[in-house]
Image (cartoon, rainbow, N blue to C red):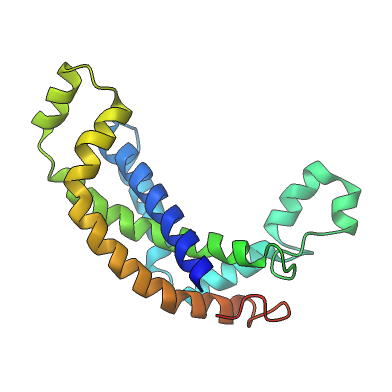
Length: 181
């Protein structure tokens, strides 16, 4: 449980902030489309997401092993990777599903915070010769820190609940109790 809370929280928050900064600050074609695509997993139920990832991770017919077999050849077909059956990688397979489910929600939360940052601050940082990365760490992060702190609390609480649901649906605690939470 602690492993899930720590890994999923750090990766989800990091990716949500990075993707949000890219979709908010950069002028990209299709920004709205990408925002919708990132948010869609949040409106799906945990059961649906678990079923999708169970199908992706299926050792014989799954999308992931089929893709990897393009590079592994016949040895991949004969020895498929057991994403939900190997004690070494099963927890990380669940982590990926949990991260995919949560990124969109937290991106929306951070979009609201970043939209409230005055453009003048970014312009002043640019005039002072600050790089985009430096501006992100010295302007954006400090100004959205209260939102990050609040969403972090919400996320830790929901991760405790979601970890049980994902594990129960995808592995039922297996293999050999390795994913019991």
